[in-house]
Image (cartoon, rainbow, N blue to C red; front, side, top):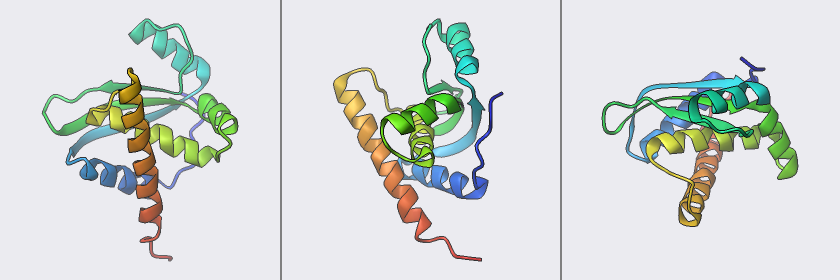
Length: 140
């Protein structure tokens, strides 16, 4: 798949785990795959019958209530473009999108105005959780 961003896997894993715990969910398995626009468009067409670019597609594989399992595909091209469009750092937009996918698995939706508002608030809380988590990281 596409170009994988350089991430501190441990920090991101801990952050996403804390996000799950803050919503009283348990982790089964969670996979993030980074794609190009065209790769994600192909997934969108093949599995969802949608013919448009998107920044993220989330597949919920959960079989047990409260246990989160899923595959999340992220277009790095869309994340870069959206970061520029919203005047934020690439890393900030990537974190927002990563949280967005996990929030879908937790149960958040984003079809109605009310759902979109709740999703944005949850994304903002996830970014705040990242910031709070960083203050607790001990230097080497």
